[in-house]
Amino acid sequence: MKLAKIVLAVASLAWVLGLAGCSTKGCSTAVSGSTGGTGGTGSGSSTTSGTCTITGTGSTSSIYAYAVDQAGTVDSYALNTSANTLASTGVTGPTIAANGGGVGMVVAQGQYVYVVLQIVQQIYGFSISSTGTLTALNGFPIPLSAIGGIPADGFAQNSVITNPAGTLLFISSATDEQIAVYQIGSDGSLTAANGSPFAIPGFQPQNLAMDGLGRFLYASENSSTHAGTAAVAFSVGTGTSSGALTIVGTYSAPIFEMRGDPSGNFLVGISGDTVSQGYADDDNLYVYSINQTTGALTVPGTKFTTTHAPYNIAMQPTSTTGEFVYSFSLNASGAPNAVEAYQMDPTTGALSAVQGSPFTSLQSAVWGQFDQSGSYLFYYFGTSPANLGVFNVATTGGLSQPVTPVALATTGYWAVSDTP
Image (cartoon, rainbow, N blue to C red; front, side, top):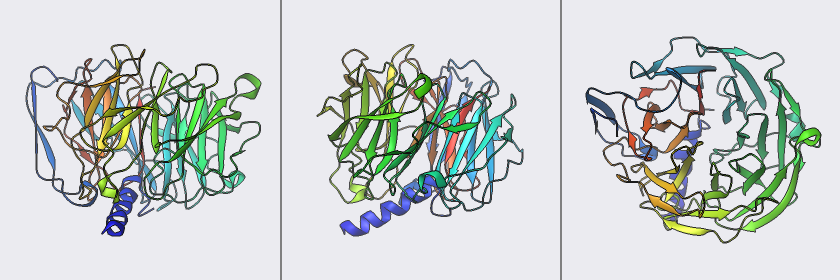
């Protein structure tokens, strides 16, 4: 039984990552249909009624989401915060390798998109126009041969990340026990950091995260069963040594995925252990203090109880009215549970549940990402088709669902950008 559940869950993560084929005032929101089955498939839909206005603090009227289309393009979708709509832009996206298998997609500096494909071992780069259109950057795609290649891995959701400033790109390679670092130029060009790729003998890096101030990098050890057991911390060089990695500590800790809080004082992690993977549910978020000089973590971390065992997490990138972390989870059948929200005290690291959490009246989802303003939490659910939706994030950390989700062309990685 345990092996069957693991196989089922690995399959469900493969579609999430694209490797299988490759309260708002005056607004009431209702969710209908089921989301049963592996990975949350089903006929779930969203409807809205009343006068619905998005009340986030974003400064732009349009926010764009980009998604890998396994047919060989990068598709674009626009959230219009004036008209309260989320829809395809209708523009044919730039070409990438078809069925390339995802490794990751990120936005840097709010104006560049990078897509890393495993099958062809390449990095694609695009610039974002003021209307959200993508244009291929000169010199791309770039081969990944310098780091020996990236392995296919259905659980490495964060093997490609940037620093908060968008000036550095990090790519982990578990097979080669290395992390590649690229400096991102003001024109979107990529230059390998001096010394890259950086070897970690005896350690296979998988998911990556930075502290909220972009000074330290953290990597969890590769796990084929979504169960974290160890992590490594690095200081990140600046100036002429920009992007250079120096190991400052290794830790035996239940860290599978992690996020740095905006203050830079804490790292929030999850073990990844869930019944959906054949393990006992670990209904906890772990908060680790970060040494402000070295980047070392205080282990063991402090545990804070959740309603469901976290499967993925998202951290709001801003802290103007608080610091909020959101937990996405799966039930024993592999279907998503309601999203949970927790507020962090940036001084103590203590977490407390946000009023209304878990948000059972809203669409359940398995994966979420913020726009740069931190006002909108985009979420992903389903398989046939895969769907993308948006939660509005209140100043209290509460969520509302002001727009109807949109169906994506295929499963795959995706990223969000405010208008440049």
